[in-house]
Length: 283
Image (cartoon, rainbow, N blue to C red; front, side, top):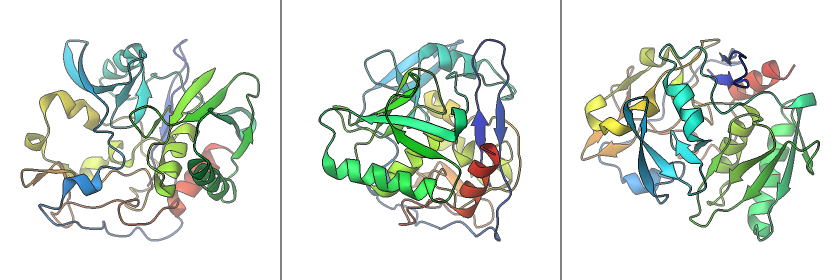
């Protein structure tokens, strides 16, 4: 089901990554045909953000370069080079104390809309917030709180990305595509959710075709944390397969075929498992 990773500050605090039990039977993956147009499945990958190669702990890692000392890892997660180094040095994927993320106090996430953020995207983000808050214990409050808040904007390249959990101070949330599912996905990161395909038990459900993945991008498929509950094919946090030259990077073990995800399938809402996990995390 859901992978939630609490990444606490680097001052010797441990990480918690967990998933919560689904409230209904787990459904099969939504298949997609080999050779399907990859460009139609790119809403979460930010391919338009320039890629740079960082040498991290002796490993070459391809990341999106936001040009301000921040990078995009695993498609849409905002990290610094130090954060990434901390994460990649954790070979067991248990501590993973990168990004300094932690729970939002009192289940309350403060936010502000940047000047120039379009009214249509503002409405989409507010709809995503209402969807989440009506189903979970999370509250969204406009303002800066005690200085820990989310700055919501559209970057110059139209990227979709967010910082995971409460990093402290002002943190980034960019919505380039005016899409409700994308907004919910990025708010999921803001709350503290990580990608479903990063679960430690991922290999029981998904087979990674490493030959279809450039060597400098393989760290994106690193498994981390602990398992709680079941793998969730319906999670808003699951990425779809990506097909390059007829070969998909991920395929379902049960079907042997590549798969779609919630957003690409038009299911722009939290799964029952997503809801259960958020509520368990923010008791």
